[in-house]
Length: 314
Image (cartoon, rainbow, N blue to C red; front, side):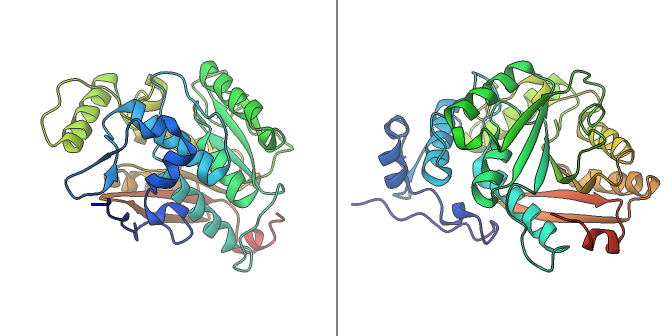
């Protein structure tokens, strides 16, 4: 019996190419490496073991080649290997956010410049944003190994050379300082902040995730999606990182149309909104997203009045 077709993921953004699920027939055609990990589950559907980091990386590499024309994508061992459908959703909702101040038209092209805080070794947001909307990006990180891997990805895909620039944040105490320069004008910032407060907390979170994936208690915290310390946790966790980001953003009120960041914990929103009120943000939006059974969201804020937003030139 042939495996059944994939199920449409109707909770993803309407423009998300991954709504139709993973077409493993196509993906294994473009990537023989992925074929090693594909199996048929009890529901007669093709899938992979999402608790296996090598399988997840092979899936990502195949998706990036099939859907975004990215060749030879790879990341160093144990670095964050992001689930692409969810990352694409964030990009598409950013596009909607920009369209709202552009007469309902999504601005496209190199004049739209995004700032990716914590680009990581995977370079995923700039890759998707450039492939879908032809946006340009500045990607920053405090990890030189991560940035060096982004350089390799860009070199292996020459179309990214003029679209993505990289910058080391030399002082890990800061987020925007020495990154946003006086001449810069960013249409948006994007960020997937470290959400744990300690390595121990990150390990416990990984064990919970693996237990859910495998339907049995996990005792070995092998990161299926990887992640280095700086990617997974920081002192004070997600809330402290976002609070710092908000206070720093207030120093660059006219140089960015929309500051945004993912917020993994719904319980942090109240504190985040209070901090945004303290810095006199002109407008705050909370955009809800969902990937599979997981609900997520990002918060967006601007210091520009409605008139200034309308007058922003892309």
